[in-house]
Length: 389
Image (cartoon, rainbow, N blue to C red; front, side, top):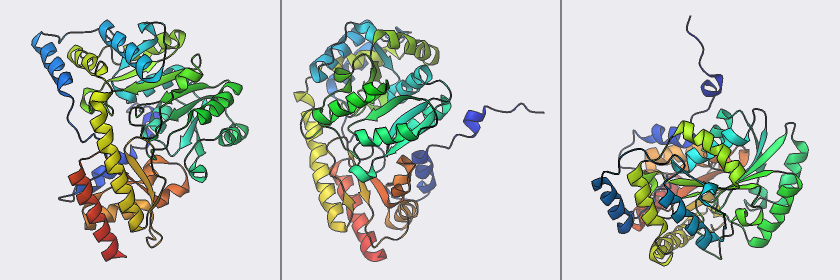
């Protein structure tokens, strides 16, 4: 008799984005507007530093928590960009991307049976990582509040929860909606989080891609109960480097390090050296990326609105979460599949990001790709809508 596998894994739903991508991979000549893959090359200074590290034989084990020079550079970066004033590099862990950061945090904070508040829609892998940690997702439907988390929404879900509520996972600018928050909105939420004695997991990976106003980190408002997650994938076009970070109170970070160290041990040293160069780049030297994304956002939003989609204009990240035109009667899963099959464009159904029925009327478009691909994809989408409906 074969011993059974881990039930947490066997009952885990496969990632919906990857599953959908696989289902349409058989169609030829697709224009992909799916993944959040930056449409820019990694900055030259980063590539040169990485190459120099390889040539200097920086290919052996590194510091598990992150090389000292890297954590020092990241510490200065967080202080300069977001006014996050951590006492020392011991407040930081360098991780294998944000995904590993989230998993390590969940395994540290969440006891099996604990509830985690998640503003919905949200990045799908949050739910899978939480399930593997034995936690219970407590989604907060933000569709009725222009996709913004509100104090009322938090209070309602906490009141109805039948499990202990341990923490809230807060991602902004948000994937998939692009929504972000003013300082005043964050201050009100912070009071609510503190009132309920919640840990705050603040995923701020898109912080540098904030188009209106300034990004304000929850770590500045609730420093003793917030663990900030960030990284270089989106801001510096370094998705393949898999370089994320965790920052928070040392008492919590030292516990998370136990999980990180046993899972990853350490990141490649040459990647860490390249990341040092990235953290030292000025904001002005990277503005061309944000300006390019904003141009694509404005173009895509105007085109989709003209096609009959309804959307909240994103204030950050590089996604549009759009409600299907009224003339489209099928749900987003069917629409997205047939669009790929017949129209030659790949988008992600809204159901990949949500536990609520409203998502069946939404699709997510990534405008991270270059303008040529974005234009081609939206032209195909318009043609498909005109011919099909």
